[in-house]
View 1 (cartoon, rainbow, N blue to C red):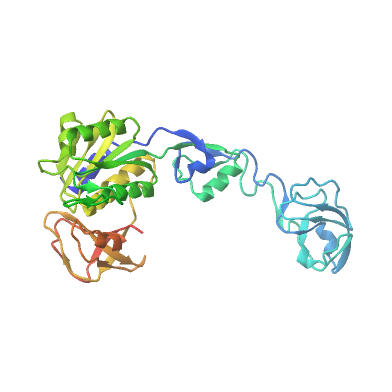
View 2: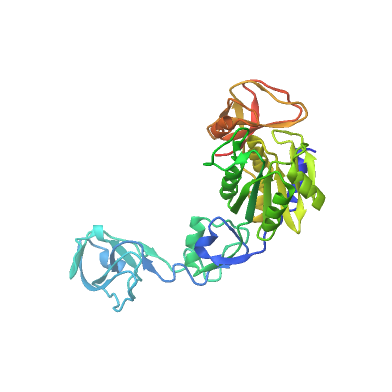
Length: 395
């Protein structure tokens, strides 16, 4: 199966999760499921944009001139006095404009007086006044459904008096790493055993994509053990990801159990690394099964699982950015397979890219150095230095 066809199959099981109400600060990174209207004009009243003096601009036709200070107006106060000819009100940034005044003179254009003030510059009507509604109007739609909530969005939502927001929630993901040979990091490693790197790798990838995650494993290659963990995961997950046990071996338990249960199809995808794949649903919960080699696991996550997670979140940006870059070295690519070669990308425009040392599907050292995946088409078997290639930017 081609990469594109298999990705379409994976995404066919994914729909944005039903919206839920969450506290405002928990909405960061999530997608709005409702339009948001402004409940009042913003600003709600004419106010000063500078510390200074509220004046009648016509009093300043000849400067310097002296005005009597009739009131102090700090931010948050309500003006009591009316500014008349020959008077001024000392005003702070954000404070409401008093009646009668039509301009603000900045404090640095005066002597800073508190009973009388000497004004040294003329100003035009409206100077340094923020007008009511000049930013947003009452009833105006300020954010539409489908908007990704950022820190800047949070500020606007808070100004709309929104303590809670209707959003598509973070998917609850269970990662299950399998294999008799695996031991958790920090535990003694016996003969023939290796440390489970896929579990922590996938947990980190899921968190980076914006979802919440539980790690189960490593789980031994025994059908009953895997079945028990799977049943537990089905009860509290929006997506289950497994690694290992999907090839053609005698102990490929994931394939054995899920194949017998039905609903999950296993495929050979024309890609390198990461040919053995599986996806489907069990009890209505999407499941994606990934190969066991760590580089294959990572590449498969980026190509298939990350877009699936972002689709569940309702994100418009399900794919990472694509760029073009000039290769700094020659390398080969397997025939009839789309290769995702690991590389180091330099720059954002007129980029160059160098393949990392060690492109084997087991070689974590090269993977840790990489900040991009070079996408080499199925029909290309040799990439010459100086060639322009498409890259998935992982930065």
